[in-house]
Length: 136
Image 1 (cartoon, helix red, strand yellow):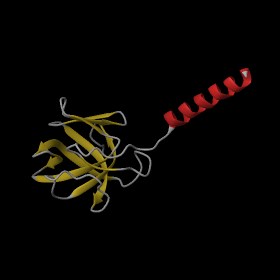
Image 2 (image 1 turned 60 degrees about the horizontal axis):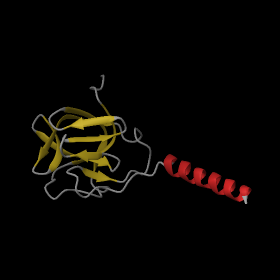
Image 3 (image 1 turned 90 degrees about the vertical axis):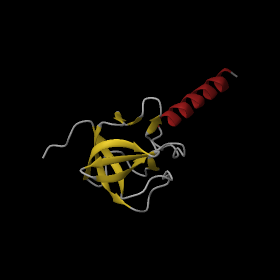
Image 4 (image 1 turned 120 degrees about the vertical axis):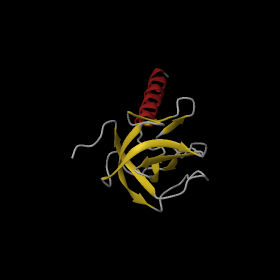
């Protein structure tokens, strides 16, 4: 009986650790103003085009504005929207409405799983990001 309890406890710990270590991305948040997709690969891997500009919330859609151009960044579903702070957070990044963002990825037209009704324009699949401008 003692060994059965110990085996059960060990199995429970293994299950908890396996669940905690999973890298499965969460489903998209249909209430977020950020367009999103469920990532199928690791963060910081993928296309290396740059999207730099000011993150804005326009009619319920998060966009990046730069030099008169408005682009809809499509974030992995790992990013969580905080409506009070007006931030989007994941992977150690905090992106705040009104501040400059520096994102990597590429133009897309087919992988968006959540696109707020008010979002329109060119879409940019976000696959990496940083808090400082890129060098070069």
